[in-house]
Image 1 (tube, rainbow, N blue to C red):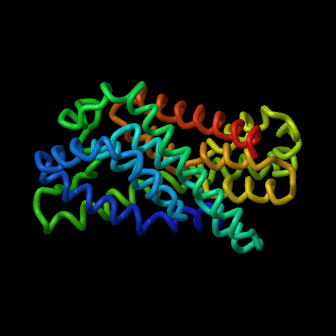
Image 2 (cartoon, rainbow, N blue to C red):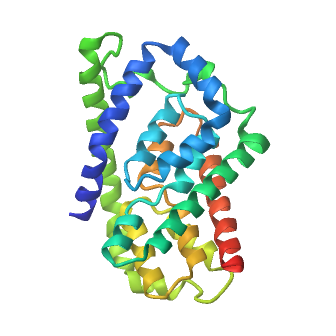
Image 3 (cartoon, rainbow, N blue to C red):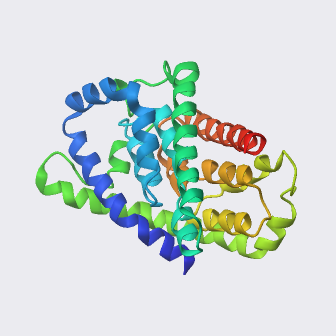
Length: 279
């Protein structure tokens, strides 16, 4: 039920994103110019979008990246600022507005800083929207047999893509949630090196596990005093909901996809350690 509930929340956003993607695919020249011109401010936009407390935006932005409409550094910023269900859980659990504001602002800052660092130091010369997607991505397969060349097929193509992605996510998340269930939250809490400066390293690894349940777990561990604030920020910054699953499934270049995930993890760990040292 948790698996179905989590995935169902993403369906409206996925559907809207796929409508936008289908529409943009009919206007590739204009879209390429726009994407290229806005790339320098991408990390800021990505950080603000990811900060919206909804678990579907990381998936939607992953889909945009896989179609060539989002730069790698922008996607990293989205992932780092995403908190999935953390904010609603804090609100429901009586978390202070100061804590919530600190969490949101800190993650936005982390996302913007890391996004620009990776943009200038790593990804700037590795992304060419004019050549995306390349031959490694089968356009007909991704479109699921639907054409997006006219307005009459646009809705049908978006529905088809949404259904295909939803089915894939349900089966994948069912497997992951089952594994987490048998491991148990108590076991995860016992191995998180409580009080250690290296706790963010492990928390970020847990954050990489796809699914909204991970963000809930991290907040519960934080409020229980099992992990530090830096550990929670590391885990929440590394977590991207179902975004990683879609990225690895549809990315035209798997090597760059793994680099994006790796950069997200490294930035989350460093940020978590710095928070623990400063706060």
